[in-house]
Image (cartoon, rainbow, N blue to C red; front, side, top):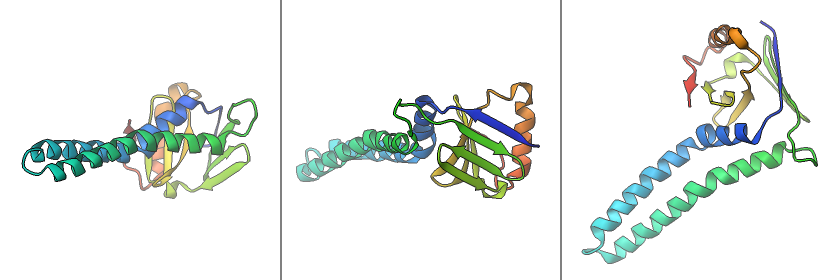
Amino acid sequence: MDLEIRFYPTDKMYKEYVYKVLCRDIVVCCIVAATVAGVSMIVCMKSEPVLAIIEGVCMVVLLIILFLAPKDTLKRIRAANMQTDSGTYPECVVNFSDTVKMTEGKYNIEITYGQVCRIFRLKSCNVLMYAKEKGILYVRDNFGEKEEDFEVFLLEKCVNVKYIKNR
């Protein structure tokens, strides 16, 4: 199956990719750790006030990380991908054949299907993850009725992927 997908990435796509894929673990860990720190702070308030202050400081630091890490990641992605003065992203071309080839502006990458470790289905796009923090975005608008066939094709070719995760 040879398929070429052309699209212009949007801020919405990148934002969803950062919050639901790249920074999801950080967000979940910060929420859990901040909750534990908050509960510990309340429990220790009367018996150990110094420990309660330390727990409170930890909670504040975790909350700052929770809000700043995804925003900083998104800012870095935008800066790396924004190549025009008009503030738009360059056209992205993803080619599915014997390998997966992606070209976005001056950036080119080619991976084999065996390198794909996870596939995510987001609201605005899909993501082929080929490393822990590296992925190729593609849109589903061009498929129409062939979307199910394409997903079956991907799952057959990507031997390391058992299913497509919805996020």
